[in-house]
Image 1: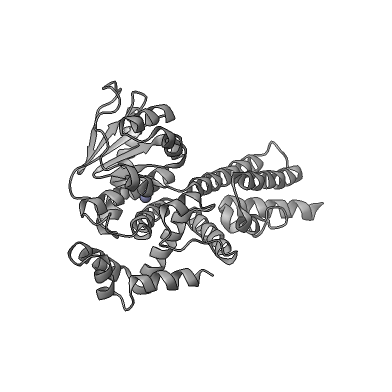
Image 2: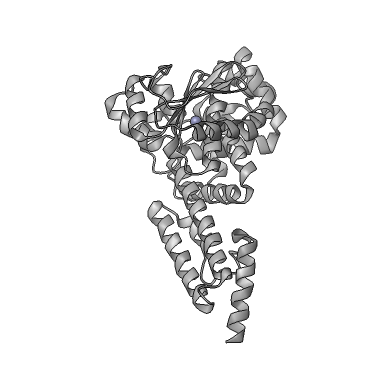
Length: 362
Ligand SMILES: [Zn+2]
């Protein structure tokens, strides 16, 4: 009995120190890392949650349920589990903004909420934050402003693709209804509205960004989305977004978004990246992976997060050949065109890179 108590106390200490580091120690009851590769959908994520809850109940049984340690353990574990689950769901859902908006929209309407707003605009550098409906609060606008000031803008200033130099507007929506109404005003076909409402974390067209706030559950997600969309506006402003293949356009925005998220929570971000990479490798091993140059019809029907492969392709290129080279290649795109610029900076053609990268996943 004494040994069981000692075991429980050690586990509590490990868990309070940090859940990821301790996950190996509780491997008997919480094989979280073993479960990641088989995550197929949100049902699997909720299964993992239940598994961890079951493990937690087992541990709690060993200790006084009213003790401070038990309560702390419970809060810490549940925070980590909920956070990781939420992030995985969001990342898995994908952020199909660029693909959808490339297809359908060139400009978004400026005024979308009939002028009934509880708060006014707020400006951070050259970025205007605006409410898109009357339920967007001052607190929310301030939260977005601090995300831009603290993380997104400093990161993009020195990051791949840069920061937009001209004015950008970010419109915030508090509900699916107000976002849906705005999408109708933007001219999105009625049959696509539901898809946008449920599956986009944000969108960018020209120098305008729309953010459905309900899609970003945590500050990490919000900062990821804001940085991602601002990155798109920077590429739009340089007039190179439409020249780049989708995997580069989307991969660059995801690269910056994930970097921003990592600034807030390195451990969880690394866990998400590992888990997502593993899923894509498994898709590749089952021969179900689409090539990087797959057309939009294929992408819409794919059963996995196609844009994650775009992200992996950009990460791999930057890791292999360096960020400086990548930045130089991008700088020359508007003058020389994508393929010529790529070949003048890299020792291989873009087609060859796409092929080599695709094969490396198998
Ligand atoms: Zn995007």
